[in-house]
Image: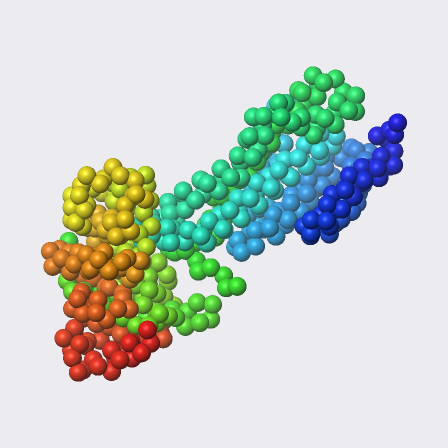
Length: 256
Length: 236
């Protein structure tokens, strides 16, 4: 039996990826290049972050942890802003949303004494919060952008009836936020029945007591639910504004 | 509230470096229906949207009753100047909700049944889902929704372009009737000269972002307006 501890095991699982690539080629899905990039990037990034975390654990300096989390927020915001092209001010909006969501959640976890203020807890939990907030931020922004393009007419009809920009976009904002949050809400509802979350799987495989793993997983789930909702709502309320002028006029769409 | 004339003076609008409106002057007299005609791309819709500040003009001014509208709160201006678009775009689960949308935002009381009757629809439609009405009926609801705010003027942006001939005629009759009954000042954008002849008191011709001229209806449809009419017919 090949153990999980060896690099060889990682290489063997690449066999599964090879099957995916073969299928992509056979079905002409044009996904093989993307899959290849994903494989290489994830390997390099995970290896790098492994060394970084290892190094930071050794430092036992909380400021380094904060700096590292801040860097993760900036990178997440940049990724989200790139997804949401044509959304004015997408980057600063994503920085605020992801940053506030991460800070609020981690501060709460620390203040309530749920986790100790050490790199071992803050970096992986922060990473989860930031990653999930980033996805919610991208989904919300792209959805608002697409809906505004598609429903320009309805929005302008509302404005023409004396609605403020906020009132005119509110139905659209509602669907955008629902779309961004429903996947996570549904995943939370079905946790344990349909799938076992990654963190829990990891802990159980690593030999932790299943009940201990469940306890941590519940903390993680609530934390994610809270932070992702904060991020999506912040992105929603900030980003719709950049499509309007202060005089409640919908900005003309950018030229393509 | 007394009906109010609209005066557009030296209006310009630029978008992404293109001049959509160039130094446009238009006089819309109180209580009259002024038709704005011209080929597509002439800037007719842009002119309407500049009048109620759905877009911000780059230069010039629009006066309502002699008052510069750039100084008004845009929300207040839009409540005073109703607008009807090419397609109805109704919101809400019922016709009554659709009719009351703007009035509710303004904190105004309005009777949906009475408004529906004003636009020639039965008050019994109030509880229907707007999507189950014909497009012509929906367009009437859109007019009722604008009237719910008791506007001084109504801007109509090709309100019949999505309708069949019969529905088109009925909307035209409604517009002339509202103009006569309420003394509403109206600006009616159209590209159909026969429609203009049926609804307008005055005619403004636009081309390539500029006004080519203004005529009384009788003049426009006599020898005096022949050149302008031929220009429009040739461009359609």
